[in-house]
View 1 (cartoon, helix red, strand yellow):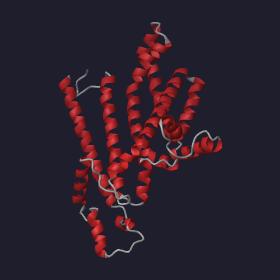
View 2 (cartoon, rainbow, N blue to C red):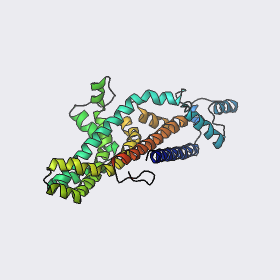
View 3 (cartoon, rainbow, N blue to C red):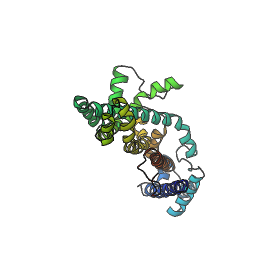
View 4 (tube, one colour):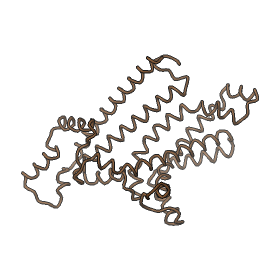
Length: 319
């Protein structure tokens, strides 16, 4: 069993590496195909001679062919060197690292809100049924259809401008102040994820409640709370974990809109401003990190499922 698990983990790691490399090729080549010259955006307002423009292109590696340019970029990325920003004149890795203290707490906060509220509402609605289930379904459908930028505007107008309960901009300092400042941005990111989790979770919990072993447990006199904890929640974990992994990995990308709306100086707002300025090294660096996070989270979820769900086999061997 240990050998099969090791072989499975090795195959998954190689598959994840191939996925990241394939995505990195698409990221690099697609940004090269974007219309416009990044050097002209970099030197806007200044008149340079053709020799000076050629020197700028050479300095930033923009005069290289696509293959040579990609190999140089991905080789640097493997050494944690994502190149230099055209606008900030500093390393992309440093730029991103400096903004993680805003983006990481924001993503974790949004993840906690969406998972706790989404699975909680799903479980209560599946167990209670009736009017509670219908109200939860309507709430889930409404929030799923609400994009983060609309949620951000509504939350700002209601809880910041209208009621004055939360600040409209800034990330705050210290744990409690940062928690207060990030509450509305995290809620804006969590709303759509909450809706999906509430709907998927409701279906998963309801399916488990109808399973035969749950009925047998009830007929033997096992209490309702114990049945839910031991059989319903445990049985619904595999499909829920799969969906949670995909959604949480997507939260990092969702910071682009929300951080811009709330004036947060994080990785998402850096991405938006870099796209506007055609700062290609920053854009492709952030995109590569998003892909790596997405693949990493999904690989970890698959690994967790092999330990949680006895129906999942490793290397074709049932545990």
